[in-house]
Image (cartoon, rainbow, N blue to C red):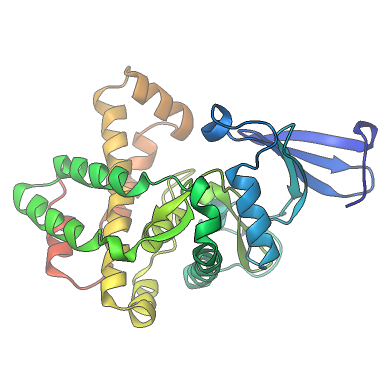
Length: 312
């Protein structure tokens, strides 16, 4: 890329974390990122870090990620392409996301699934190269979160939930991919979903990624996982994968409801204060989250029992 100096920078703004947006006088838009906090303590100058390796690999393979433009492994920074467009959480809302046709849930989900599949394929082919950068924590984390969800359920519903979780969390279905997954880390650009954060990589379920990227809590509850999307996914990936998607979909909203309960019942607790800063008031979010919980998904008696057994 063409070199530039600090005098060439016309505008800067924080994108959160270690990322800074740069707009240059010649019109170029870039993102400067440092070594992420997850690796800062163990990273040593001269060594590549996870995001640098992942972006270099994925961009070279044509995956939907920002192009890596420059990096300094001694100083610990990288410069990447800026992807213009709204975060996926904004596009999920039934409003105009910006220029061009307004995408529907099926369009969003198809672009999301296609992009993730390509990323997972590229990472799987480079698994040996990526091994030093893999964090193997997601599976255990989601088992614990699934267990905590039982506190929201009536006893019979909790039994059905345990059975569904055992079936869904099949280690054979794990794939290598990003771990910091939410709708704010994906961007809608020209009909495609671009994935912009690879601070951590590890094995997780494709359906967990789809549920995490394809749904948002604020400014109000929104989801790309409609009944029509489930039917299409079951036909493409199989009924078992569609059921696993439904489990992670419910887990997503169950965790949201747990947090809203904390905000309501323990309003002065540190967790509640932090959540209120991030989400706003619980009363404004509860109805939307409950409606998402009760959405139609796939025909399964255990799933129906879990949905009906919510204690709220």
